[in-house]
Image (cartoon, rainbow, N blue to C red):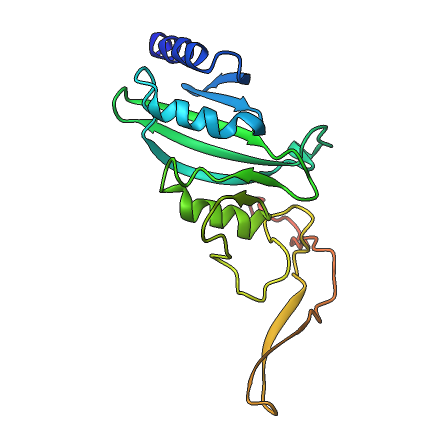
Amino acid sequence: MSTRLDLLQSALESALAGKIRTSVRALGEITITVGAADYLEVARTLRDTPELRFEQLVDLCGVDYSEYRNQPWDGPRFCVVSHLLSLTHNWRLRLKVFCPDDDLPVLPSVNDIWPSANWFEREAFDLFGIVFDGHLDLRRILTDYGFIGHPMRKDFPTTGHVEMRYDPEQKRVIYQPVTIEQREIIPRVVREDNYGGLH
């Protein structure tokens, strides 16, 4: 296994010539992180270089690194992680790129490189608010058109911002501000005397 990873690591370092910021091996796979300015060029290189041939994008997702592992995170907040597959060489690779601006996270779209990125980028836009520049149909895919915010961000309230209900007077569904009060949810443990003991 390590010999195959060594071959892949060597091919990556040769093809990407200094564009890899970090490279981590874990669980039999390699994860590389590249800069946002190099993202498109790296993606094309990974697909088109004969020694790599990552012709398939298996998955692309957004990540909110604020409070990473329940600790303050010192770095860019939003990241896009792509899972790539080389059918030619039977290799897998994880490609990470951080959005340079936390207030308006923008990255170029890789939809022209891997068409399967289309819905994945729409999902990351919808759930995390990451904008993919050059995507021809970037719109919500899972939430409603009138939805406010991005529900997978760690600062999104668990109750949301609006709720919908049927209004019998208007005879239609309406949206209104959330009426649920925030409350702390702590499980209440009630045990009988001698719980779990032998009688």
